[in-house]
Length: 366
Image (cartoon, rainbow, N blue to C red; front, side, top):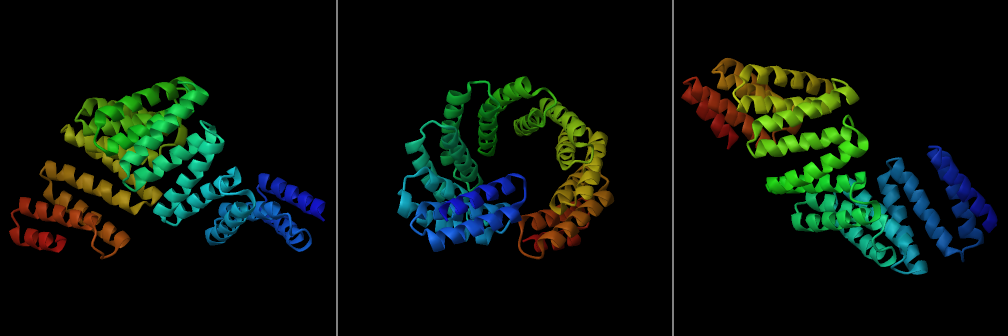
């Protein structure tokens, strides 16, 4: 009976490797039924099958079912294997992902930290420990725990260098993450340092036309923009755009993002006609992609350029369309982005010497 269960489990794994999740699930469930009814003393195998079935539901997007199975597997594994077994860490790691998808970020972080303690104890300075540190860093950054994120990324970087060497792409990935974190914190010199190191590795290891290289050029461009180095920022973004067009096609959302930022920079450089050309192309792509919030962002930027050119009617049209899109997407709930569009409309009415309409927009923004 146990052998039959083992054969079914292996068949299930093979089906899943081939992308046949339903057939894999059927094998796992048959195997679980055999174990539970005929060899219930093999509790570690029952726990493993609960985990495997949870993984199938995770891949298929049935997150509620997956979480229930992972919780059952976690409890079973802790009873059979103890609290510091690597299989317990694997279940906690998957549970963290599920909590994150359901926006339970504090619970996700707690699961990752528990998994990390086990992996550090059982597999010090290993690939899995480095990966767990990276996940903690990314999650901590997303919820504003900057110091925790920095410590996690620094430790991941140390381990990556120890395992792979200084010039490995995995090292560059962590450096990119650190650059993004320091950019968030406004420490642009530190961000630039990590971006330069990431770019050097990615360029050498992946080639000059890899999308990872484009990502780092884009990030560097943003940081240089924040530092006021507009010419250098534009150069980085042009490099990023060239790679993204070549690799993804001219209508890719990443191209739209890059063009939007380039247009913003050209407006700051007072190259207003070029700014409009870039922004209208960004708007075309963003409309194709259907991202309403990004569409509204570009409309606002186009309106700003028209206002700078003292083309107030055109600016007002853009701001009003920006407001319409944001209200459609965000509803009438209080949102800074809706207020931002109303203030822009108020500003252009003020430019047009229409104080009553300006005041109406400002009051609506409050």
